[in-house]
Amino acid sequence: MYQPVTMELTTRGRPLRIHLISTGVVSVKRRYREARGRGLRAFLDFVFDNRFTGWLPIWVMAIEHPDGVFLIDTGEVASVMDPRYFQSSGWIVRWFDRSQFKFDVRREDEIDAQLGALGIPTSQVKTVVLTHLHFDHTDGLKHFPATRVILNDLEWKKPHGTLKHLWPPDFHPVPVPLDCPYEMFERTYALTGEEDLLLVHTPGHTWGHASVLVKTDAGPVLFAGDICYSQDQLIREKYTGANASYRQAHDTYERIKAFARHENLIVLPSHDPEAAERLKSWTPLYNLPPEDLAGRED
Image: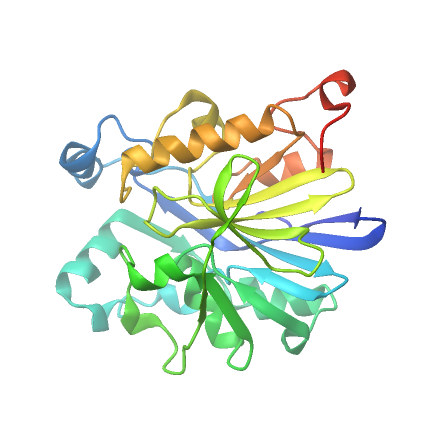
């Protein structure tokens, strides 16, 4: 339903290729996608909502970088269509995930098949980077049993809403400290030697949620995970129905928008139907005129 998009770019004059890939689609309660309140009110509002969104993508990003292939999140798998999929997590979780979400994921939608179609065997993926530990971002880990997996150490220490029973039995990620400031972001971690690929702490959805900032010569790209369901929510300051901290979600919004006001930033949330088109047409959050970008520091 959502076709992959590939962009040929450069970073510091070196070739870089970005692939945005949807591993099937998901439909969520409308009030889960965009809340009318916060906390318990928001939770009850979406639980009792009987209206679902249309089909939304489950984006992951593959980056062919001079330092190797990086995969940001691993997406969903066809097994999620099995009514027994959540059984090991208990009846409450099974009821919740079956009643609040709908999936349409085929075997050919899984990340290994899609990477193969792009000419990237899973064995060529140097590093898997997780934005957070929710199952629609981690279920594809089964295709990378020997690959190094990185995530924010806070996400590992203080998970929120994770289903550990669905993790591969040999799941041993490398938690990394995000302790280096960059621009408006207080906590980042450099994934590459040139520091042109950063893991950026963007909390709110979970305590340790992180996004990936790709610095290209054409401008920066932020694979934003689940900070919001669409870029429009970021602009209008609307929030999803399930956040670990609305205060931190608001702070994340403000930092991203502040950064975008002096950089032509492309923002790509994980479930935004318009993300691929924005990447393909290279449409930043704010279309800044050249004079606003002149003299900026890299």
